Length: 351
Image (cartoon, one colour):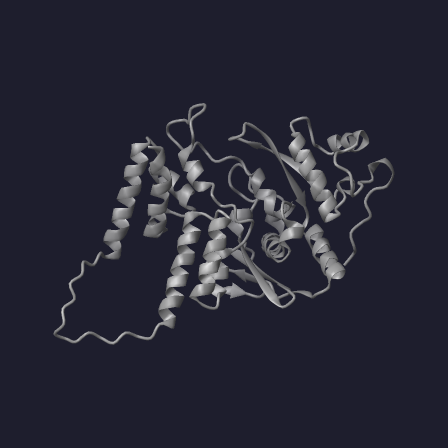
């Protein structure tokens, strides 16, 4: 593995005690595509990130990419590097602080849910899984192809996602796993492979009624709750030793701002582990009658959908089916009742 390149010398050298970009540095950054839409805060944060990661922006090891943000009505600049930059940082941290770094075999998943240790199909995989092992601790991450693939206006893949979909999906999974294994060193910077989907054409209008200036897009507000920093909390909960460990994962997911369907899935996994650990209950005597009102899963789901529909109607949201699918991250018919109720609770306070 080639070590990180030495930061550019002369007037472009970034000093450890530097608090702002010099005029010469700013001139080169502007030539690299950072225009006047960038804010002072974004430039300061980028300088701090370059100092912390020791990646050189003037050698294109790390760079700022501006993308239009509809909510902020301006370009928002995001630091990016390549998966090679991630690997360099990870190996440098291990070299400086000691320890061990390794990988388990990469796995790819087909559409039926079966995992393979090599991908031979001409069709793209449904997902890829990479496990980074740092000092004996496993950091597994799964990346779905549909969540990261870069597409054209007609929805077909573009660029390297056409030629090497399995490799690109695996790179995204590796980036997620490395960021979990090295949270301090990789926080705040994403790989180009992960961010390729950010350049996808915007979807068609979500609502039949346009959101007016100054009006909150409640479907978007309900959906944009995943601040989990790339962690696969569902996979972590699945591999947790017991219900107490799952509870800790749930707390971390909640603090990270994971969406409702993720939190609900973690809860379900915890309940399953708790039930598996409990001894089987003795059956009740045949002549004993327990009075209880039992709500069938179908009735429970129907009640949750009715609750969500009432909340949507109360705030005048249209295009109910498409809006709920985007907010839940899955078709309404596939969503659990708890996730549907959680979305309804997020929408209702605005009524």
